[in-house]
Length: 501
Figure 1 (cartoon, helix red, strand yellow):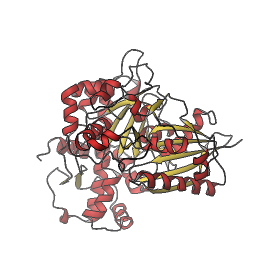
Figure 2 (figure 1 turned 90 degrees about the vertical axis):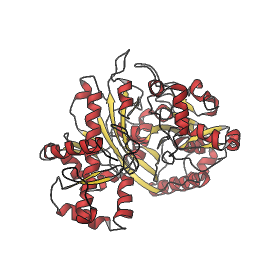
Figure 3 (figure 1 turned 180 degrees about the vertical axis):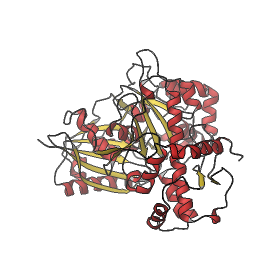
């Protein structure tokens, strides 16, 4: 018997919907896909999503047995007492003012906040957003009855219930990370919320790992083509969902989740009474600590804000709108690297390792000295950007390995690369295979997070085997296992750490 699952992914750049078929052999297959730019206007976002779901179902010719929802974290909106939005989406990447997070750090302490939540104290954390909203828009804050993140908005539109999951709640800096071996909490933390004038009743309920959030209402069914009563699961944070769907589920497994931003997600083994990593060392490295979507293991996440977004900026601004296909073809013609252009890929600071909000994009030569861009071709410069992004990923990987204390976390297994933008750009993928010391396994799903949300929802309802993963190819390895880039890597890290500003 074949089951079908629908997945939704509200991303920073695009909102995606995927219909997945789950055959008797257990292999998931993408049947129908749609993607549109993510709207900031909340009613428009909901309307466009409803239309998108209807289009996907019409193209697939079947209604799903379950719906799964994933999204970017930290983005959300205040709702009034009638669940009407009081503002456009307040995005995770829209904050530059650190005064609110500084006030929270002054109250709680940076180390103490991280020890409690696993989240670095940054301006994008929702706890800082609520502090900012209260300070700068007191009228809006006073009218806010509830807060909904991106996934929760979709869940509310489909089920009438405001529900999240622990991987999304865990990005808020207002949700306590459970002790090793403990169960994720069912609600946000009252003590942390009190610092910004909120209480847990104003935040979404946190569904237990494995639980559904609700079912499709008759009104939502009429607007989308879904069947009324279809179970809906909030699958979780996009990077966590994509990693799980790619097969990253056991200590030592690691995924490269690439989109507007890039995240390296590593599953970390934990004992019954102690974390496998030193939380203060993780904080100092600018990384975060959470749980996998099943709640079973700890998850170490290193992030890079400028990945797909940096490539878009590079072509639109520095290369003056040059044709990407032609430029990438030129990079391919250069042959294997490393090249003689070194780019530090920090358009607006570095999250990890060695976090530095003042770090900026710099173009250097192979020795780490400043380079005048006009002295190099577009292909040379673009290869430098791609190599810089891959060297940054290698640095994050090396630091994660250093932070992990368990033997399982030190295993040099394959790096599972999620599809989408990273897989479509073969030039980028080929460079990554040469730069990284571990072989790559490529998840070939066109929309790995939306399809991953569908797969996770199906597994939770018993419609797919617990070992089911999205289709993939590999492992494949660069010819020298990263050794060709050893010198470039050392120069890159040295230049990044010794940035003269």
